[in-house]
Amino acid sequence: MRSRLLPLLLILLAGVLLALGFPLAASQAQAEQQRVVVDRIDDTARFASLAQFVTSTSLPDERRATLQHELDRYRDLYGIRAGVFYRDGRTMAASPRDWRVPPESETAGEGGRPDGARAYAEALAGRRSHDPPQVWPWQREGRIAVASPVIRDGDVAAVVLTDSPTGPMRSRILRGWLAIAVGEAAAMLLAVGAALRLTGWVLKPVRTLDRATHEIATGKFTSRVVASVGPPELRRLAHSFNEMAGNVEGALEQQRAFVADASHQLRNPLSALLLRIELLALELPEGNEEMASVRAEGKRLARVLDDLLDLASAEHSDASHVVLTDVAEVAAERVASWRASAEGRGVTLTSAGQAAATGWADPVALSSALDAVVDNAVKFSPDGGTVTVTVRAEGDHVTVETRDSGPGLTDEELERVGDRFWRSGRHQNVSGSGLGLSITRALLAGSGAGLSFAHNSPAGLRVLITVPREAPEVTGQGLAER
Image (tube, rainbow, N blue to C red; front, side):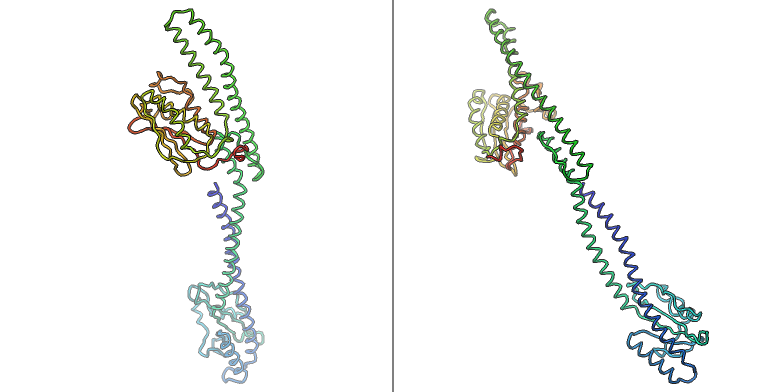
């Protein structure tokens, strides 16, 4: 979500900065040009005051020489062309000397920019030049023409015209734009930092909710959310989530308690019933088939009740007894314990893999899980079959793999194996309650381990127990005290 929300905020902020930056840059360029134009207007006004005293146009007198001298000095000092021209276009004084009034037909220069002809025409009408067109930094040939009328006896006697290069002005505009760009970049960096903080503040409760939801989905029903940061709506959502998680945990706890209580309460009547069946069997002839069937069903029911109690206890377990355990040693011990039973059934039970591999597990739960898995593997392997238990450390997990040479399971059966009370239709004649693997999975989940199943090649089933190599996070003090 952050990867989607953050670009949206950055685009909006960048749009705001650009919307402010472009007008600011244009305003700075216009202000710089206006300053140049004001300076040129002052200069033309000064030359116009000098030109008022030039009365003769046929012979250069002292005042015209003075005016010419001022224009030459002005051009040498600033590099700006300047001239004073009569109404009919004749030159009173100009620098350079060969500069003439632009023809009226040339109303626009390069790129469509108005030139001195327009400024000259405005001055002849008795007006000073209006603001000339804006010259931008990329217009290398751009120039600024400014004209002022020379008024004598209320009439326009001549026009002072200046034509200024714009290189220095364009350089100043570029420097101003560079400062604006630096400011925009700094503002954008601040905006990125603010957006990161804002998205982190908004999404922190969402990440906490996601983590808590994942923990509950994996069986940690005690996980809760601290609703202390973020927007009020998300804090209310976190509070509602905690209430929902509490209700779900309470419902599951009631279900476990009911299963455990029902199983416990049924054991006494069942034990009494089995005792009466044994007493009744003493009154019947030996080998009575109905009595043998009743005995078998009674024992099966007792085994189911015992498995239900084990399942309720396994589902209620947590990670408080998880310690650093040598998984390979535990696996070797269970293989040695089951080897005699396997040989009695004509099955070869062997161990392989690493001799030492440590992981974080509940040793009792791990031993019980291995017992159930090895028991199933031996039980379903044919006479002369082989069961191999392999231990290997892979990445952040230790894997205990049990391979058998039994009939295996189909793809559809693999999806259901481990469900409560489920048994393959091909194995109904094999003793069992259908709860063994469910109990195993619950025991492993309580200690942070996992259980999975896969096909074995060429035949049989692979059962994999994965134990984490890093200490799990627990809420109790059991792990910390170790």
